[in-house]
Length: 81
Image 1 (cartoon, helix red, strand yellow):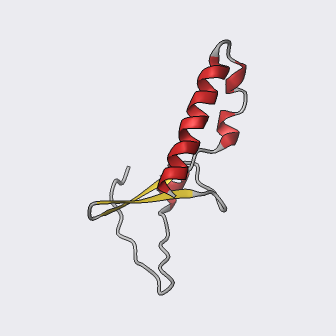
Image 2: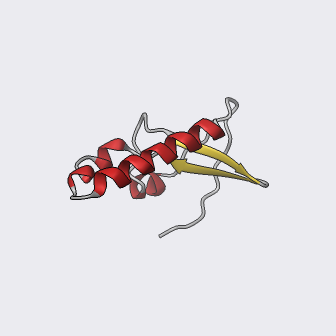
């Protein structure tokens, strides 16, 4: 599979994420991405889709761990943004 693709920045500062990347990451219209500046690189990361976590807290003993993870995510987002 292709690993690198050159894209062009529009006059509005927009880019198109290639289809193979959208499909591999299951990105759809309206999904949110996290944008980071890492030295001289722009890093795009999909925001965690809560629908993919559905049912995970029903695993025995996982609820406390999940709450801890959610709290850490919330704290990190508050600090960063």
